[in-house]
Amino acid sequence: MGAARVLPAPEQGELPLPPALPSAAAQLLGQAHRGLAEATGSPDAGWRYATAHLAALRAAAAVLAARTQPDADAGRRRPRSAWVLISKVAPELGEWAAFFAAGAAKRAAAEAGLSHAVTEREADDLVRDVRTFLGVVETTISRPAPPPAPVRLRSMDGGRRRPAGRPET
Image 1 (tube, rainbow, N blue to C red):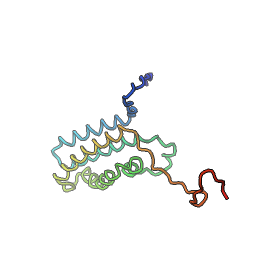
Image 2 (cartoon, one colour; image 1 turned 45 degrees about the vertical axis):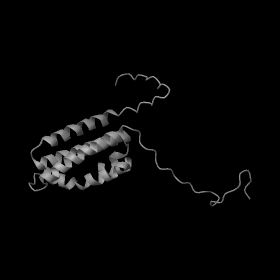
Image 3 (cartoon, one colour; image 1 turned 135 degrees about the vertical axis):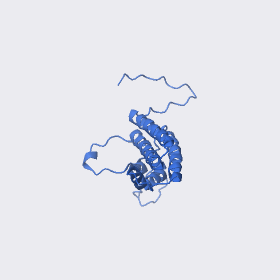
Image 4 (spheres, helix red, strand yellow; image 1 turned 90 degrees about the horizontal axis):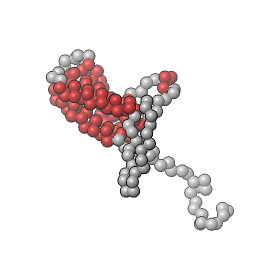
C-alpha cells in the first residue's frame, strides 16, 4: 500500500468526507456491476437469472466487507449464508436478504441447466430487482453504519426515583 496522506480539516460549515470504502468492498461492488451488465445482455433466462443473483450476492459481500472485520475463529465454525450475515450486519437490508435467500434454490437450478427453472419474466424481474438492490447497497455502504440500538438498563433500586440531592434510605 502507498503512504497515507492527511486531508485538510473541513472548513467551517462544510461536511466531513465519508470514510473511504475498503478496497475489498469496492472490488466486490465492481464485480456486482459487471455481473449485472452480463446478466442484462444474456438471451438465456436461466443464465440471466443465475448471473443476476450472483451479482446480488457480490453486492451483499461488499456490505460485509465494508462493515465487518475478519473473524479469527471463522475457520472453526460452519460457514453461514451471506444473506443471514447481512441481516445481522445491516438490518436495514433484512428484507432484501430474505428475498434473495428465497431465490437461491432457483439460482442453483438455473445454474444446473434445468430448462424450466425460471421463466423469462422471472429473470427480467430479478435483473431489475438486483439493479435496485445495488443502488441501495451503494447508498448503505457510503455512509457510516448506524449505531446499535440503545440498551435499556435496569435500575438498581427497582425503578424507584429519588429526589435529587437526597440520600438513599
